[in-house]
Image 1 (cartoon, rainbow, N blue to C red):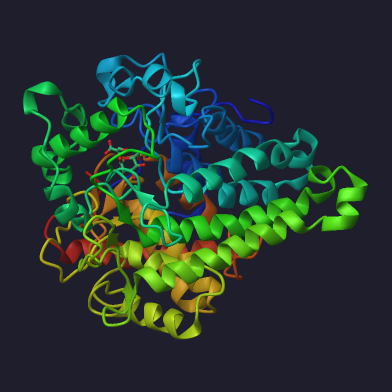
Image 2 (cartoon, rainbow, N blue to C red):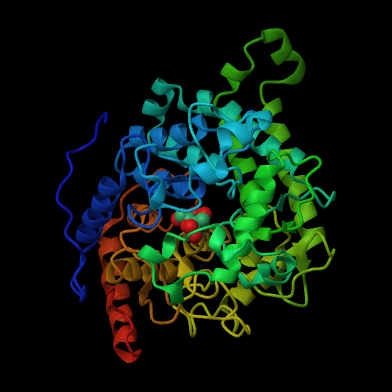
Amino acid sequence: MEGFPPVQPYVPAQRSTVGVTARELRHAARQVLLRNWTGASTVPSHGLYPHQWSWDSAFIAIGLRHVSAVRAQRELETLLAAQWGDGRVPHIVFNPAVPLEAYFPSPDFWRSSTAGAAAGAPRSVETSGIVQPPVHALAAWLVHRADPVTSRRRGFLRRLYPKLAAWHRYLTEHRDLGGHGLVSVVHPWEPGMDNSPCWDVPLSRIEPAAPASFRRCDLDHGCPDDRPTDLDYGRYVRLAADYRDHGYRDADAPHPFAVEDPGVNALLIASEYALADIADEIAPEVVPDPVAAARTGPRAAADDHRARARRLTAALVARLWDAGAGQFLCRDVRSGELIGERSVAGLLPLIVRGLPRDIVDTLLHTLGGTHFGLGGSARLVPSYDLRGPAFDTRRYWRGPAWFNVNWLLERGLRHHGHPKRAAALRAAMLAAAATSDFAEYVDPRTCAGHGTRQFGWTAALTLDLLARTTARPAGERNTGGRAGDRAAVRAGVRAAVRAGARAPGGGTAH
Ligand code: 2M8
């Protein structure tokens, strides 16, 4: 609890927030993070997701750093304390105080401490056995940069660095299932975009688990039209159960679902660069032997990370770039084919340093074109092709816009020197967060909220956007810009409310 203010009662957002100021929005976002904090980490949502999720915690830490550097550090430390011996960071760390019936699949389904023992699952905490995108090194670096003095005093990066390096090694050494230098996901939950139309073909080969063999809890909290179908759930359960029954081993697992996803790989590349920055920062501590330092140079570890990032980037372009589509696509490792669906994951390489200029230009064009519509028919970037056959404005990862993805793209726009487009996206995100009561996801055209509310990373990334200038995202230290914030929020909210008023049933949170 070091350095953290007392919890204030939460005041939900009003239906009309035309007059909201940056200060009010910042206050409301902080309240969400305070309410969702459980003592050592933050839940995405007390109802729908009552445990700690891996990539959620990374995004949440990025926002928490503006509230309490120590709490942001603890968020990541708690997650990494549940790391497995083989280096994997589990996608869920279960809170033992939460009843089993609160979330499915529950700890007694995954049985990590026994079924995962050979892979080094911890004994003292129950986790899932699959992973999520590796955003953690990027988050750790940003958390450090927010308060380097506290970070150094607590030995934050020095303690996290070996864990983050082992996590990346797990991905590159155990998960290169295609054999071409890219990481594969082995379950639709691993890339975080659980129900993307990209998984429809590879998932169709999986025999679903019998409906009577499990009970979904998500429908107790969410509207069925916003969530995956029962058939998809049956397949998710089958894949997870088979992996568990194989001891969560990768080497000789059949992995009937294996996909190279551009989002996961782009985030790994961004995190490798962050790991290089971290290694530079702690270089005197990780190379304590002066003889070794003289021989290899104190920056050798950082150079290794940068070299790995460049190799991954080359593999990403070689394996997943589709010039005809104007974006990256997923590759089905089992069939060897590219998957012809346009997911927003195919634009996420915009966050990668050193991508060839012509590819960057094409991605920027695609972002604003008819498939993703940014600056045209869409206020926020949809999760899937606006013109795709499976597009659905409200169903989970099949069209709605998500704040973490839009935050990454806003970062990409700034990185590539498009501050005005970035500022417009930032204003739209702030408005959507304000009018939807920090919804889990929103209609990309009207910003009508869907899924659960007071959602962790929506609130956290709102705080981050409010704290940011429009400068390029180097190792950013936030410098205020509050007058600009206020103007951006007001302009964005007015536009969102106008759009909501035009759209049937749109624009409001409830
Ligand atoms: C969603 O996924 C979980 C399973 O991991 C679920 O549907 O129960 C996804 O949106 C995922 O990306 C996210 O990390 C998780 C918690 O917010 O919810």
